[in-house]
Length: 368
Length: 136
Image (cartoon, rainbow over the protein chains, first blue to last red):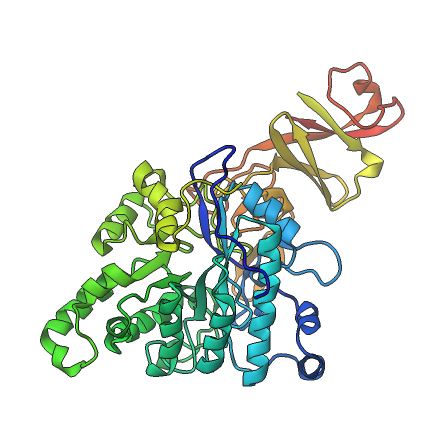
């Protein structure tokens, strides 16, 4: 990286407390934009063959409104929701008074490309997001890495991690192997070495594990939590958290409430079956409390908001929930409307900003 | 307050306009030739710009295998999460959910408007034309 930026600095003129950190914003680099940013060899390949995986608008089951807020489509040629920094700035950052927003690109969460192309896509996406962060100091980024090729992923981390605006990595919730497997450990090792949490984001190309494919978008949408349940169990049982006690995982866009009974079950089973799991050295709930975070969108919305507060208490997540809008996706959460007031000011502030500032080491006063 | 939205001739069928009235933004809809509706441009769910959403006729079905488009007021569907409202009353399609505020709209001859009082900012009102007027 030729230019190393400074970490977000507190404004010296008008110090103002950080009140909203949005931990899941989705920028989109269009196919034409990507083609301009890869080498001629891969540009010709992309023009001739395209990507191996479909665009979100081509998913089956079909997503609602093609997956996006209807008002998030920019005007002009080659426009796609999340492709226009100015619209993102006015419609999200300004409109909602967001102090920091985390760019979670989904552009390589299906890493089923040739290794060389996957590495070039990651590099192109990261360089493009760097240009956005240069233009908009409220934006921070999740590094995109070609995770199916861990050596290349580590190289990309090493190339970029010196820029403190990269505050995490992003991985999908369904890769070629379970995410806790040793194949991916070099990626976690590099993340820990650079102090970067790892966001594991819903990416819906997988069936309901071994139960077959969903027929309806409603079914698929809600089933995101099932994949995340399996991945969290796998991380714990493979001993990944024990191998990397400083690894911090941010489970992104897959709900929250399922975690409480999962941890109860894992603790109970561990007491009886621990010797069958050689890599798991600590009680699952202890690992969970120390090394796992969640984003809120789409947090469960029981009819009685008091039950949400009760769930947060059961799971012990007061310090672990990170607010997210999921902009520009159709199920976007408004920072002023989404969290029930009955959670109380203290907990709401933790979720909206405090927990993210602590996790990512952000200053408690706003940049702009 | 009466707000003159537009000359009728400049408000084509199956189109909409956004009008700012004080701090409120209101969407005015013309459905077909002669039906006009207006609701506040703010979804009661999470504050989305409701009036940017799709407008759909209701589908009614007397029995399995038979369905038709209902002739009554259409539904306005929020562009974010898909909440649906009766565009004439603002009532939510889901029982128990809050309604969006609706307003009266009329087509009024200029001869009734030239004396005021009304709000119009961008065009002159003349006796000879018809106007779309919002009661907000």
